[in-house]
Structures are given as structure tokens and as C-alpha cells.
Length: 231
Image (cartoon, rainbow, N blue to C red; front, side):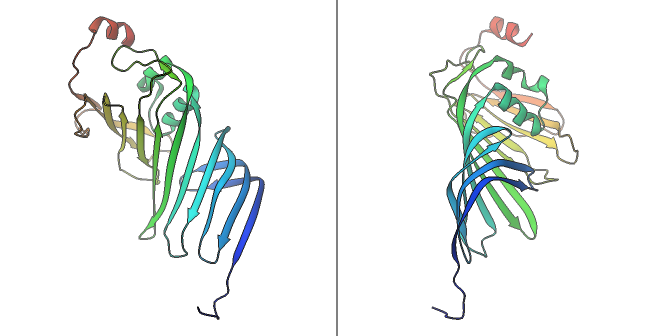
């Protein structure tokens, strides 16, 4: 033990605090709870706040002064409007989110936000997961589901400004996808979207020559139902 090093051990009480993050741009309001900190680390596992005007639970952790990663865990509840607004912010437009009009109900979600600094540049990754329990999806098979049915949805996307990396999603064992948005614009625009249907675990691959591409296989599909659904 080095007696010349000052030990710091404290507890910060947050009451209706506003926390703003610049990259990615996130504002937490009505932040309440306790933040424990030491000389080289800090953490909290029981914060409550509002994000996009909806209540969320938050856990924060930075393990050491030299740790270039801050881990943020969030959880909350989403409905159709909430989900549509978040996906629009990631570069998808309303006409590209037509299926969201067929959603009703609400579901719980969890998110992991890794705030990294690599070679002096921010490298932020967001991972979102939900079993969609409570959501009704009024779509033809195999996309449709009832409220009591669980179906895993996973989304992973980079949030660093100017990033050219693509985002991915997985919807059960039915469809996976990868998309890329123009991150150089203040209003992101979809550049490429690739979908892969079926239980094949091969990831979707972006095709530079087309905006939207679809591959894979389905055991059975009702073309009449899908025509009515898409028109």
C-alpha cells in the first residue's frame, strides 16, 4: 500500500439531475439515485431517470482510471410510437418502417451502451434486446405474433458520429438484417438494407449496388395475405 496516494471513497446522491452526453447525443432527465465513487472508479446500479420522456432504470460502471470503457445498462418499456421514433433516429424512414403500423401493446427492453475511446476517438456501441412479450404484430406468418408469444429481437448499432459501420438486427429465427445509414448528415438517410429470411445463421451482407436486397428461404408463405399486407 502506497501511503502517498490519497484514498477517495464517496457516495453522491442525485436528485432530479439532468445528465447530457455529447456522443452519442443522449439526455437523461429526472435522474435519481446514488453514485458510488473511488479514486479510480465509480459505479451505480440503482439509478432511475427519464429517457426520451419515458422512465428507465440505469446502471453505470467505470472500473478504473485507465479504463477507456464506460458501461451503461438501461431498461424500460416501449410501445409502437417509442420504437418508431428510435428507429427513425437510426436512419430508417416511415415508409421503411411500415410494419410498425401493425404493432400494438408494449414490451420491456434492455440495452447495453459501451462508451469506448480508441486512439483518442469515441467508439460507442449500442445493443438492444427484447423478447417482445406483450407486443401484438398484426402481420402474416411468419412475422406476426400474439401478445403472449415471446420472440427475441436484437439490434446492434454504432453511435459514433461519422461512423460508416453498419447496424444489424435479428428477429427470432425468422429474419435478420443489416443496414447502413448516411452518418454524415444531420438527418440520417438509409443507404443500404439487406434482409436474410429463414433459420440460416449466415449474416446478411450489404450490397452496394442496391438500396434494399432480400435473400433466404421460408417453408411456407401466403402470397395473398402478404399482398394485402403490403398494399
